[in-house]
Length: 264
Image (cartoon, rainbow, N blue to C red; front, side, top):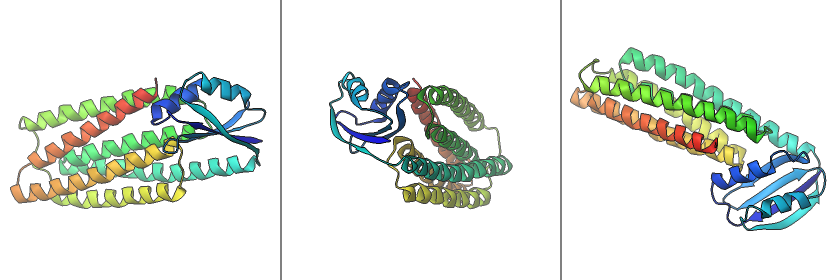
């Protein structure tokens, strides 16, 4: 097994990663691709020579330069895949559990903030699921599932906005701020745990870095719902809950858009 590292000076965002994956798709010698976007490097583990990869990368005009090529043990790749898979299953389980908890609690408490945050947890579960597929998966399969997940997440965001508007028009009771704050604190603890697990993995691959970004945004959303619960208590109004719910649904919609862009 060989490991070849290229410097790609113009690779500065996930869009270039998708271009490179699409270009190298179908080359049977490739066993693993590892992207370091901040460092603008691509590591390819493969069976034979690197000349075909170099030619394909140069055709993209992204400033490709060979850094090194050396022989490695294939067990290194398998260990890396196993570690990524274990981490992603852990955070997927945590997010899906809190999705169910927040959705049920949100409807029981009449809180759109909790419902929106629960749907955001579901959206993250989808992202983690896509990341699991990316571990050793093909680009074509990843794109198809990403597209379906993006459209599903868009529908969730639109339905959420419709419900927020309905409640703005006077429907629905003032939410139970006790439940809002308590459940949001639990969800915050869950997201902090996910962030710790992801950071502990020290993976620099794009799909793992994206997972950390989404989880960091979740922490902010949790804090937003907690603050909204406090304002509901102080004002006795459902307006703070609806405002936070709308903001979180915007985040869900933005996440859907980003997933759809990656699926193209």
